[in-house]
Length: 202
Ligand SMILES: C[S@@+](CC[C@H](N)C(=O)[O-])C[C@H]1O[C@@H](n2cnc3c(N)ncnc32)[C@H](O)[C@@H]1O
Image 1 (cartoon, rainbow, N blue to C red):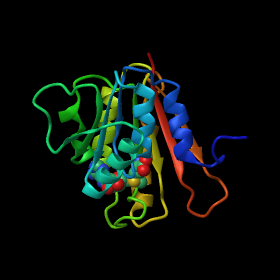
Image 2 (image 1 turned 90 degrees about the vertical axis):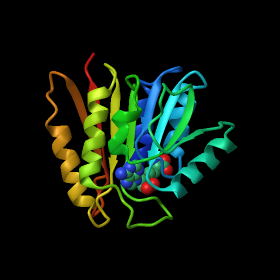
Image 3 (image 1 turned 135 degrees about the horizontal axis):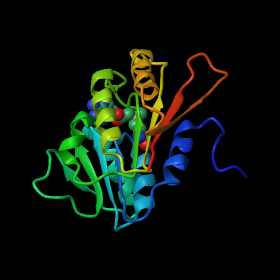
Image 4 (image 1 turned 90 degrees about the horizontal axis):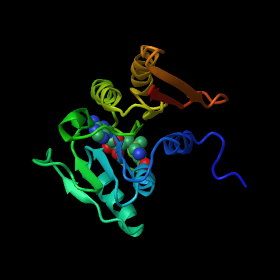
């Protein structure tokens, strides 16, 4: 049996990040939401690794914490950049992902951004082009050699198409000498979501 639907771009993102993410490494979730991606990254890096997971909504971080706790993982909480390097474990960060740089003390092997709004939450609180671009720029800059950035883009909600174009432009501008870039897209739907993955050449 196949483990997930063919067109589940989030599952594809996890699969492709899992190929380059190992135990003990650093991973980043730019949009914690319900915590599914954070939990995936946490399981992948294990207790000796670290996951930094951002969200601007307390509701999302509360949901993520619940999912992690049910899986036997006790997260740390932050509302501002730490004074010293973060210990091993999962760090739920109540801050805008555009401030990623302030939290990094090492190069992540994998970064995920599942854009849009919190499912079942306030649909007006979506990711926005300027802050998304700032976060992705920092993620690309800081990725470890061989590391990957995966961005799931949803264009069906207000503002989604504009954000999608900004993200597409960013990925298309990456020089092929330094980056391998892949796009996966649902094909037979009116407002098809898509996945962009960039891998920094070693
Ligand atoms: C589609 S959901 C993420 C789903 C999540 N990755 C999961 O596994 O369930 C998008 C999330 O991005 C968050 N978000 C929106 N703008 C943000 C920002 N500037 N910084 C961090 N998170 C943001 C929203 O609050 C929302 O929870």
